[in-house]
Length: 77
Image 1 (cartoon, helix red, strand yellow):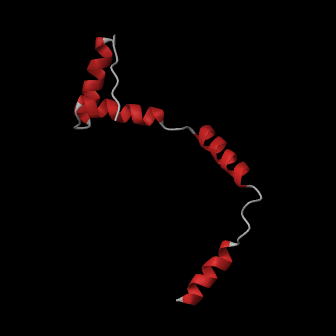
Image 2: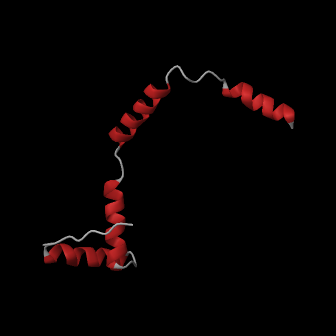
Image 3: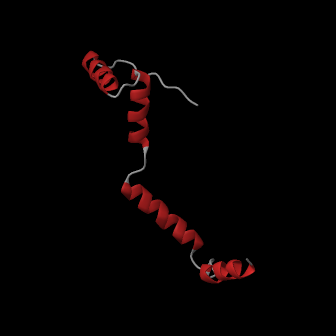
């Protein structure tokens, strides 16, 4: 896992983060880690764009009907 160092944070920002961490019963480090993880998650537009990209790469390639595959598997049991 990587590490980052954030310099020149305003003291008020640090105090607010510490306060949030105390309220959540977390360490400051864990609180900041969770905030950063949330901020780095893809937004709805990015997720939809990724779905479109995947859909475009598989268009026309899927030739098996999953219903038939499921039926065959059930019949084997």
